Each structure stands twice: as C-alpha cells, then as structure tokens.
Amino acid sequence: MGRNADDGRADYLAFVEAHQHRLLRAAYLICGNRHQAEDLLQDALLKLALRWSSVRDGDPAAYVRAILYRDAVSWWRRRRREWLSAYPPDRPGTDTDAALRLTVRAALDRLPPRQRAVVVLRYFEDLTEVATAEALGVTVGTVKSQCHDALRRLRDVVPAPGASGDDLVTGMEASP
Image 1 (cartoon, rainbow, N blue to C red):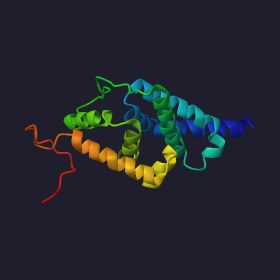
Image 2 (cartoon, rainbow, N blue to C red; image 1 turned 30 degrees about the horizontal axis):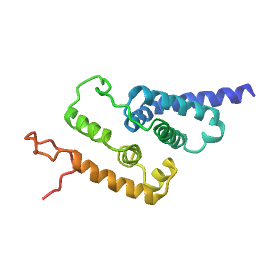
Image 3 (tube, helix red, strand yellow; image 1 turned 120 degrees about the vertical axis):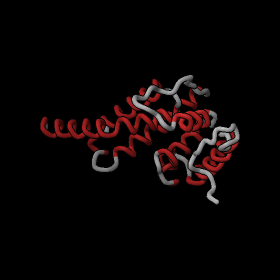
C-alpha cells in the first residue's frame, strides 16, 4: 500500500510542477488579483490531491481548471465586488508587448465576472464552447451569449488602433 501511495504522490507532484504556471496565469486572468489567484490555485490543487487517484487517468488539468473557475464564480457571488490591482505582477525580462498587455488587462477588468471567465477560457485557455460550458457549469447557449456580450463590450472599451495616435497593433484588425 505504501508503494502505491508513493507512486501516486510522485505523479501528483510531477503534474503540479508541469502545470502550475499555466494554471496560475489562468487564475490571475480570471480574478485579477495575484494573491487571490494563488489562493484559488492552492485550493484547487488541494481538491485535486484529495481526488488524485480517480482523476489522474483522465485529464487532471481540465479538472483543476473547472475547480478554479467554479471557485472564482463562487467567490464573486459571495463578495459581489472585484479586487482591482493597480499594478500587474512583476515579470522578469523585457516585455515587448507591454502596451498591449496593459490594454487587454484593463479591458478584462471592466468585464463582469462571468463574461471575463468566458473570455479567458475561450481565448486565453483556448477551450471550445462545450468545454467552457462544462468548466463553468452553464449551457453552451450561455457561453455564446456571454462571449458575444463580452466581445461587444471589449470593442467599446478598447481604443481602436491609431485612435490615440499610437498605432497599437492588436492582431484583430481587418485585412484589406
């Protein structure tokens, strides 16, 4: 019995080491606060550890993402307010897309929690509509409508390229 427990622990630790940075980034994008993101991820990884033997043969990353997003939504429902961060987290090295990152981050801050969750899952985590609906515990129709509303709102709050004279390229411009 000790050997199987040790093997499971080693597999769990390997999973955490391989996926923790991406999961933390997703948690941060969802909640907008680094400390809260770390807490969400820690709670999600604890829940994963408790169910590791039944989840490890499937897709544990999807299981953790579902926990992250559901716990974040639960937190929003309890708090009914957002925690805004005046400064993005420090990142080592040079950041050539700093203006774009700040623009996207500010735009995400202006979205309601459910719309932000849908945008992060669909466009940052690259999940399908069905996978996003499963992660959030809603219908596919809700994902579609929330995504539509979020993109419309993002178009309203993000300045158009060249509007402020800075020719910011977002990659979403129409090609002639």
